[in-house]
Amino acid sequence: MHDGAEMSQEVNTGPDGAATKPLTVLQVLPSLVTGGVERGAVDIAAALVAEGERAIVVSSGGPMTHDLTRAGAEQITLPVDSKNPFVIRKNIDRLAQLIRDNNVDIVHARSRAPAWSAYYAARKTGARFITTFHGTYNLGLPFKRLYNSIMTRGDRVIAISEFIAQHILDTYHIDPARIRVIHRGINFNVFDPATVSAERVIKLASDWRLPDGVPIIMLPGRLTQWKGQAVLIEALSLLRRDDIRCIIVGSEQGKTRYTRRLQSLIEKFDLGSIVHIVGECRDMPAALMLADVVVHASTDPEAFGRVIVEAQAMGRPVVASDHGASRELVEPGETGWLAPPGDAKSLSDALRNALGLSVEDRESLAEKARRRARAQFGNSAMCDATLETYRSLLSDQRSLG
Image 1 (cartoon, rainbow, N blue to C red):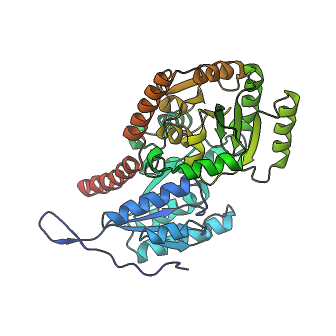
Image 2: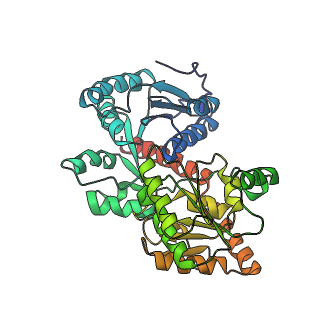
């Protein structure tokens, strides 16, 4: 069941020099495929190990297991990705045994199905329970609110934006004192213009057959309706410029019907020479270096909007939908523009403004965007705030005890 070698732990010392037990945190999430939830779990595990603490991650496995073990964390494979009630029930006992065997202090759940098992396992063993609330979660079906509510039952509930914190309060009416807003973190060693070679940028430009000197509008995001690709295509028809290129970047994840719909829309507006759907890109820093404007056109409010910060870190102007966490990430007129969601005319106007920036204004905006992104949305800030949440929770428990 254990996928990594047994870890030897450093011995921490208290103020008097006496040995203390390392803080042991067990994170639980469905799998370790590439994504924001998974990236956050790996980053926190690495931060714990770097400070001499112990990090255990329970999941059903996945390609990011290697990242975990390389960071010195421990990976344990259980079927915590299952939504089957019988499997969830069985996972309670499995997790409880892991908590006891490893003397776990804190159980941190990052998704709903495993959170149900983790919550009851923590209650059985006396471990503290923390959740990270990653999205608004659908409320339409019967009992869905109850199912979602497990993410509000932590001793501390981490919200990944102020928008999500307000959603929790409005929808689940929990004590605000339990909520901690910790924005997702961006790795600025990766998203840094200085670290992207010209060769990487040239390769992508060649692969995508982009002509030299043509303004590039880019929308990164998986191909799904609520990401707003269709709104952007309509906005481009209103822009009425044939001296630009629009690159839609993202995996269709098997949703070929939506891709065909976008292609039909491109043909309808006679934009075939301008708009190109290029699929998934594994070098987004280089892709963003090609962009003159980055668009985030989601029609549903986003819990965070990582691509906005990634683009800002690369010094790119951003046009984003005016709802959700975008309002926390974009300063209108200073680091980008906000347009009403689903409003092609307003999006077209914002694109016109972004493309019309002078060289001096573009450089000023880029510097402001980079500075703000690094100051507020760095990976180290996310890790520091999360580890402080862990330690303050245990400190509060000891003071009460």
